[in-house]
Image (cartoon, rainbow, N blue to C red; front, top):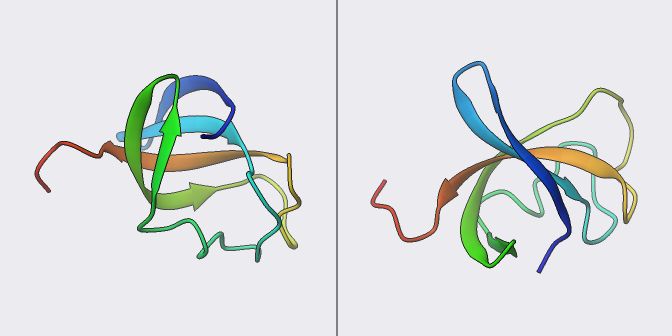
Length: 73
C-alpha cells in the first residue's frame, strides 16, 4: 500500500500523487507495470512524472500515471 495525496490529470492521463514507497532510479522503472494499492483501490503504474531530477528517495512525493487494476487495457 502507498500513501496517496490526491488524483489529478496531466496531459489527459489519470495521475495519482503518492509518496515513493522505496528508493529507486530517477525514471521510476521499478514501479512501472506493477500494481499498487492506494485509498483502498488497486492501480497499475503506467509511468512516473516528477519536477526534479536524480534518484527518487523513499517518501518523496511523485506523480504516477495509473490505470485501474481491474480495467481491461
